[in-house]
Length: 406
Image (cartoon, rainbow, N blue to C red; front, top):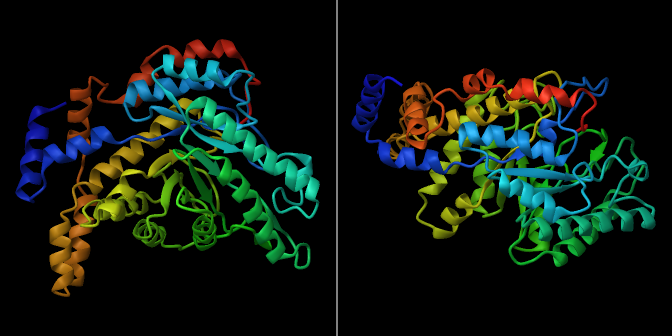
């Protein structure tokens, strides 16, 4: 790192009224959860492209995840997916994770790959299938208890392809019935994070199609239910930052699944398509972090930042590194917004001045800042380069092909 480059950066930001010590402290506190499935083989609707060295079991997924955390200091927890990560002894998996300096994060039930769920899981017209799906939700609550996980992250593929295929209002009631049973089984420390998606794999209607439906369901269930925003689960042109601000104000934003999209739920590397959107999401979060309402500030502190990606053609570990580093970069830029300057311009009706006060932070090169905090944390200045120069990527080739899918 160039001491001169950082000194100039610090001087520049302090002249703008930015407290660099506070910025650095917040950057060091940033935590991003990576998903176990992001280290396994995944694919499109057409093909899974198998890679050499892919983990063969959940234990090896955590070993790969540890590489990302050790090089970045950003990713101390790993989300698991059941049954993709099903093991006989979850305490053994938990001990393995902790031995690597990691923890088990959100538990994600899988209610979309069983043959019985073709026409719905918790919203299926067959009560036996609904009970089977609910039992799986309850199984995941038990797994969360064993792994010490706080969050249960729920996404349902349930929906219909044609008018008349299902009774939408009945399905809504069945969804609530299943989630109520799961909610009642949770411990007081747990949270239910309810994800939504506008379409796919169902194309006529999805039972939880947007943030309003997820919010309404959370409201009915109780304070331990919140909304999870997946940045790829919206229609083109959706103002995700607006949704984020609204949910924060309602104290119901539980977390994110970060990824990038060009057309639909592309699950591309975070920040690879529209980094300004990610920056603006953090702008809304950091604006709320300064709110006079302690409840709002507490809600912001409890937001879970998680990655949800499908690395179809990329090498898994470098792709995950790029994602968490991109999140860190946009968060760092958002920390450079002078909120007082934005507010003052807005109050005097200076539209362009307010927009400029936000955009100017995005245009800064934060490399000197990121190098400085990595140096202070004893991390490589360039985590990607450090990984590529290490032997780990070559060492895991002994696993061969045919590792765990998803």
